[in-house]
Amino acid sequence: MAIYHIVLVKFEPGVTEEKIKAWKVLASQLPSKIPEIKKLEVGTKIPHQFDRGWDDGIIFHFDNEIDLKTYLPHPDHLAYMQACSGTIADRLCFDLLV
Image 1: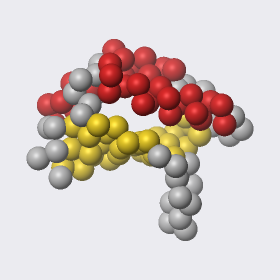
Image 2: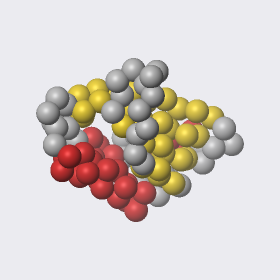
Image 3: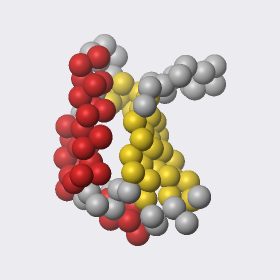
């Protein structure tokens, strides 16, 4: 079974399109740095009446829970999160076993 690690984000008020693009680029680089990430999906949000104000999202694919738990404290993941400070106001993480 695989795990989808779904991350929804709300951007800081007034964040620029340039910073949003940089956030997506940084996220897209994570699989080349963290082998436990089997696939990463970054797209463009389609607004929905029930999206509750979430601005964007990313879907990470992992083979198992061990890989997910290895990824979370990984230095490159922590550096990514630090680099996103000032861009991301809030996030919601949801893990789905498929």
